[in-house]
Length: 269
Image 1 (cartoon, one colour):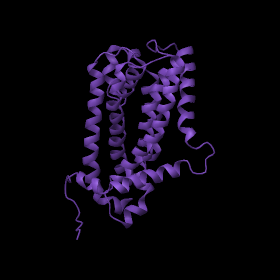
Image 2 (cartoon, rainbow, N blue to C red):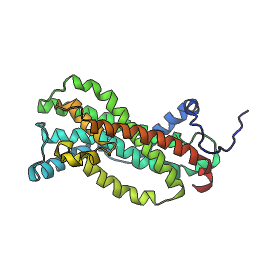
Image 3 (cartoon, rainbow, N blue to C red):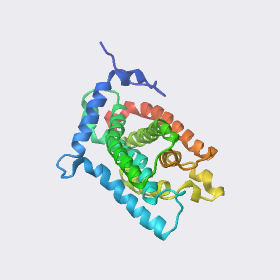
């Protein structure tokens, strides 16, 4: 017999409960993938078309016209490499923030750990990320750019991008369940965030303003991807590590806040 009681105060995270519902997470990931490309002509090709188009556009605007430096890397690769972790982050952030409202019938009818919803939404983006990464391998060969041993650090930066997306999705999905303003403000904020992260490398930011730039949790991830895949020189800037530390704080704080707000989801969603 399972007794479900309302939590009080700052509830326990109960991470073991997530493992018990791991099959539900996998099912929801599969469902999101099927729905995403249902009745589309190009299907999963959209996972490649969008970053390729944006990388081309950024190359023309920010390199040809604005003259921003790329550290010696081919401009197209410089921006496409940044698009991969950003798309993984942004897609999980946007859809994860809406995951509770989008699944309100499940929430009001059956019991399961509500954390399953934003987590499965973010993990579904790994498929598009894998497709884009495979295309990048071909682009690196075409431009004659071969990664150094730094490429071994990718298994570190990819989870950081996922944790960043999940952490913010925990916060915003819990807020969105009560206040629908999130869905109206998030696209605008994400667009500004996108240009500030992908278009402007940290080397172009004045020294006096870099600490503000490093408050962006995705700044360290994007710079790390460029360093790992394009063989660029990257010093261990403490401000970049600050960006990654902020990711951990956001993720842990999001877990606790989500669990605390979880007890009223069925009433307000």
